[in-house]
Length: 266
Image (cartoon, rainbow, N blue to C red; front, side, top):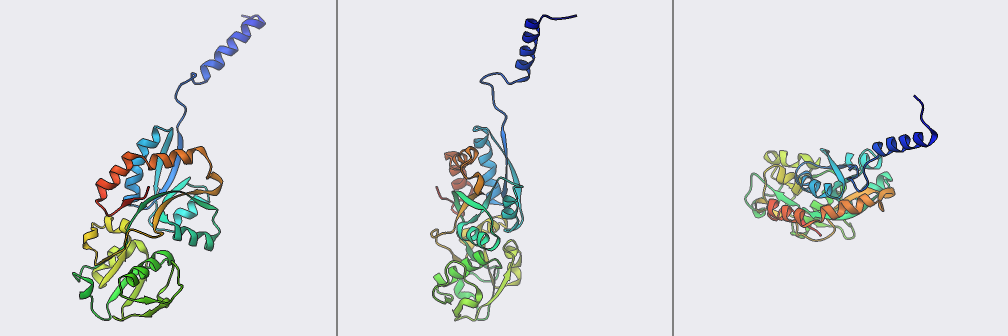
């Protein structure tokens, strides 16, 4: 059976129209892989997902158990964003590893605490006590700054945001510092006199802010951030993702779920 040229054109047009989505119909969702650490960051992203879906973004949450791999994965393009770190940590990673990463937005603040399963107050911590701190420069330095702020140690002047144990110039209690991976700090509580624990790991371990012997004031540069590759900074999906994270629904969840242990920073 043969068709006239004009009829063939009509058949072809109809076939093309059937293959394309109807005008005004829903566009395919854009999938974003976002790296987080377990605990609050993952919980918050779960609340961001339905809000982002309204903007045509489908979020796939990828959990990492440490603080190093999420930036490696992002820089390599294996994920599109991550949400787990603060600005000093990112700056240090960029300086050390040359990553082309940028901050897209502020997220939440996790005031760091010094916890103990052996002592009820910092005054009760004995001379020569063992104190576990994180072995990465940013978080370990942050813990030392907290101890200095509370009068437990003195650091040399000009140390900035990443001091090390070598920068301690006064140590009245002769504290012994044990440097370990941040994720392990809650697990060593039975073995040390005290441990500096990031709030996301403290919450995951069932610790509350009220249990901290010392606690960081919710100020300074340690607000957490949403990070993307430099080449994606101006992409439309970044603005949509930030708007979803900064939505009233997500703020209400953070304030209700964490009761002050995690603070919205927008």
